Length: 248
Image (cartoon, rainbow, N blue to C red; front, side, top):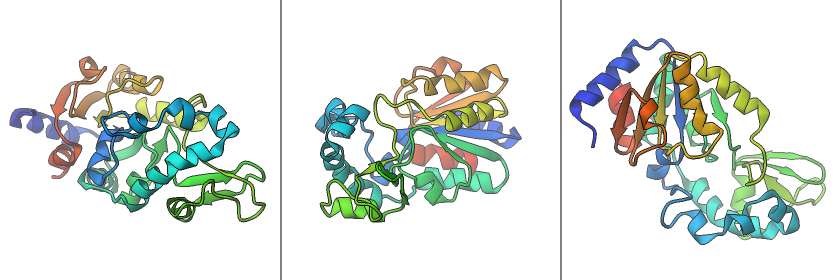
């Protein structure tokens, strides 16, 4: 559990920082009703990612991905931003937060009002046709999947649609990673929220910010691989802690 003195120190870092960045993982969205994929009861406990979520398995049989995607769509379509997402959006509105780097694919930070969101793993609400490359964004595709249209088809050519969320075996997109690195090198304070920092190369980003002179606050229920990099570690739920240290 976090201590009142640690909350006070973290809040002082936020107040004194000129440029703040945030790095978010699954833990920030749990209170919006989106379980961590790796947690007990999460997606990867019920669907083998090698069968349902690799580039090869999708091209071989897209029905498997979209069968899993039906459950994911039902969750993401009804999810709403929570107090942690909203607190970060307010911090950006005040001119202190310069960007959010996220491992999440749920679009909740944008829904909260954040303008600069760097998505390292893509966005589940974006999709494109693998035949004609027609692009889709929003709830329509996933609402049709939630109703049982598996796999969803392109309205233009009838081809199969693929979500823009990054699948296992696909490289992280170059532009978002380059933007994330740039943000890490130009920040006074990075707030790491809801990630255990086990997946590389993204897990190296807090160290990159630290090397560039930034202070690091880590907020997570469990320990992370980068607790030793942090100036302050706060154990608890993002929805409780983030507003405490950012609202003033």
